[in-house]
Amino acid sequence: QPELIGRDLVSMTNPHWVQAIQSLLLSARSGDGFQRYQWEKPSTGQLTEKLAYVVMLERWDWMIGTGLYLDDVEQATAQARAKVAENIRRTMWSLAGVALVAVLLVSAGGLTLNFSEQRLADRKLKLLAQRIVSSQEDERSRVSRELHDGISQLLVSVKFRLELACHELESGRSQALETLRGGLSRLGGAIAEVRRISHDLRPSLLDSFGLPAAIGQLAVEFEQRSGLRVDYQQSLDMIRLPDAESVALFRIVQEALANIARHSRAGRVSIALLQEGSTLQLRVRDDGVGFDIARIEQTRSSGIGLRNMRERVEHLGGRFTLSSTPGRTELMVSLPLPG
Image 1 (cartoon, rainbow, N blue to C red):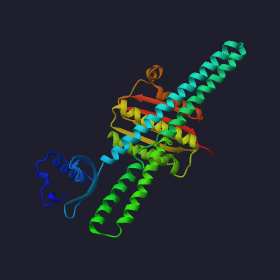
Image 2: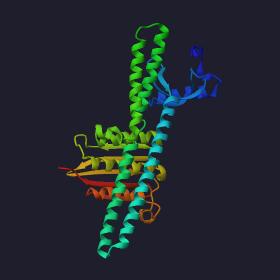
Image 3: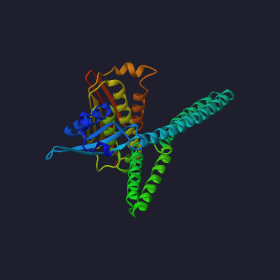
Image 4: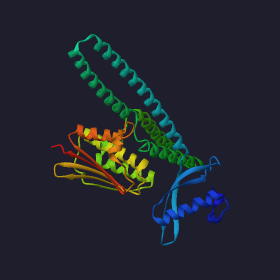
């Protein structure tokens, strides 16, 4: 946009530009750096969402930064979400059909069997229900995962490479073809990531770097999304937990943060993942309005998340405690560490 060179953008009459420049200056001076705003995209001439990172060079009193347009990223994200939603819907219908057939078969067999055989059928039905719940969790693990880890970075990298190739072609540079090949290679990686959405629920950090790093990333994303301050403390860098414990604790933190965002009206959240002797302790605390634990757990339509948390912990031989008063709600999980 060479027409903007040398112009005082702060005093321009366009309200979108004025708001963007002032927001960028504020982010640079506060040290935050990241700012999202609207700007006219040169290729389309339309106002488009843009994400920038800026810093202040105090010695010269300059602000310098760079940014990228988010319209392509948001379009790809929306398509991925739609595909995930469709896969989940099909899976739920399939599971409902399996459950219905199983219930009908068990009921028909119970009518023809004696009392002892009915008790056996009841035990099999309970086992079947447990398997259905397990299969739902497995299927959700297969069809979902964090969309922003990997895909956005790959797409932004492809965009930068294509723009660089355009500049190189315009300048007649010989490396333009190699730049295009690199962009195509990274585009292939992005396509592979989108295809993997239906195969993975957990973030790659949980498998690659373990539970502490995955919860840390979850805390950072929650802080950015909700605006709440999140303090995270952990002392398990050298401990590799089994998959069952890692998944259970990660799910508990996910559910706890979702409840805080929906109900607590808190301003600050703290998460601690610590080793106390041979015990692993997870604590999630907020300074929100609190709630009546007994009433929530007794309500048939509520408290499902709390019951799921408690069942996960008890299944692993741990202890789950929850306390809540106005200004302080604390969730505590204690699990025995593997040998």
